[in-house]
Length: 129
Image 1: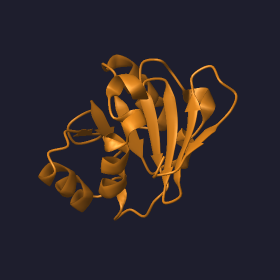
Image 2: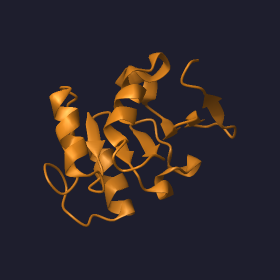
Image 3: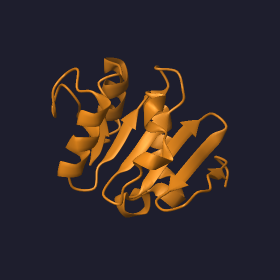
Image 4: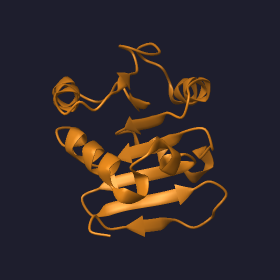
C-alpha cells in the first residue's frame, strides 16, 4: 500500500492516478489532516506493509526503520514527486512491497540512498544500476 504525506500536491496525485499507481493520502483518504510525524509512524504500524512517501526530510532517519513498513523521502521539487515515485516503484531492487520493507530511502536526481533495518551503513544506488 502506497501512502502519501499530505505535503504531496494535488496535481502530483492526479498524475499518479492517471498512471494507475494506487495510493492513499494522509488527511484525505487515511488518517487526519495535520497528523504529526509520531502519529504517522503510529498509523504506519497499523497498516499492512505500507510504503510512505513524503517530502519531509525528518523521515530520512535510520532509527525509523521497521520491518513492517518503508519510508521514502523524496528530495525533489514538489512538481517532480510523481515522476520519482514511479521511478522508485519500477526500480528492480525495490519494485515490490517485500523488497522495500525495513528500508528508509532517500530519492533524488542523483539516485537512491538507503538505510536497511539493523545496519549502520548507508547504501547508494544510481538510477542506472
